[in-house]
Image (tube, rainbow, N blue to C red; front, side, top):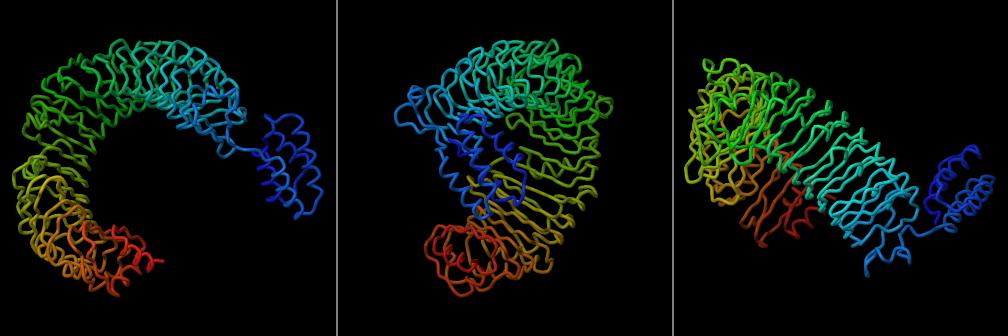
Length: 621
């Protein structure tokens, strides 16, 4: 039974050359709170004897003492605990002397635990508890972390958590708890993280959290909460994160977040349809807010976000059709830097301030924006807004937008844009990109660092469409792996990309001959380090393709998913290749000495063929 304490004693005896006898005994005694008095006296006597011995004898006797007092660290079922352990279940186990693991034990109740007074972490995930009874944890006086996730808990008795004065985190997620009664968490004064997500909560007593003044994070997502009273969070002045996603909050009135003066993150998506001027009152330090209007109908009274002067990130999902109402959402957000707006409706120009004359005040509101994610409703597409008011924009993501359409909309952009992502989901049309597609973009195109183009259609890359992006570091052209998409390349496709370091061509149907020609330019640029061809249906001469890769001396990493036989031999080895990932659907593969030469210089290899793996890893080792 003393195994846990003796471990510390042995560690001291072995690692220290000199130490004070009384100090050591004091340290050891601090670990013996839960040990019977007779054992503590015996152990003290043994330690005093060992201290008088030579170092070697100290070492030997320490392990003898360990063996003599050793006890199992497994929580053995007994007459007292048999009712909790169903037949055939595995007993709980202690880890690292302070962590008790009772996961997947099919427990019907929470059994008495050995060494209760030293347990700091108790994991009861995935059991069949149903009820957490009164005072069941009362002797776990040092418990810091309690996890009851997914244990079929439906009832928390009034004094279920009595005695847990040191508890810091409590996880009750993925259960069937329907209400939180008054003072259920009374006494948990050190609690910082509380997770009650994915239950069936419909009611939270207004004083449920009244004593938990040190809460920092509260997760209530995916429940059935319909009302939050003004007093619910009145004691949580230190709370920084609150998640209410996926509840039934139809409206937010009467100061629902009163008291949350330190809140920085608030998640409200999949909830309400009504906001008022008092909805977010008191949240003067809020930085991240996520909203959505679930049914397309909404009512916005006044300017509900105007008081959120510290807000830097805002996410809005839903159908926004009333332009006057929607414009109110952005008034006062003078520090907003990141906006994620995925909406339907006909108000994009108002949102992005391209109508100066009609909405002059609102057009000053989003000038600080540095990051914008915009997605429109594909069932009711509208023209893209102009982005001329976004002078500080550095990152832009456009969803459900054709590449050519996006190119036109960005002509008026005047900002230091560094990252651009365009995601087209229109099927059945050909996306043609040529030397004129991006020609009219502003001077920002020469400083662009990352360009990502995604489509489910055929992509034609004609002439030299990327010649303007002289400082581009990463280019990604990809299509859906579930669609049959074709990429047409030419020898001029990548001309001008002298600084390109990472090239991703994913999910495409392309012949190796066109790929060889397009990649040839990188032999002279000597900048490309990563080439990703994963998810492709390549066809043609693979030996010639590999020869072309060997000419790109800067290459350090290559990823391929070849669907045909990569046979015979590799004629060469790229000079600086360190990482290689290959995959194919055939077992017909020959090897030569060059294959081993390639493998010998690799630091990382990911291969699906067992024979290749054995040969290559043998060379790596």
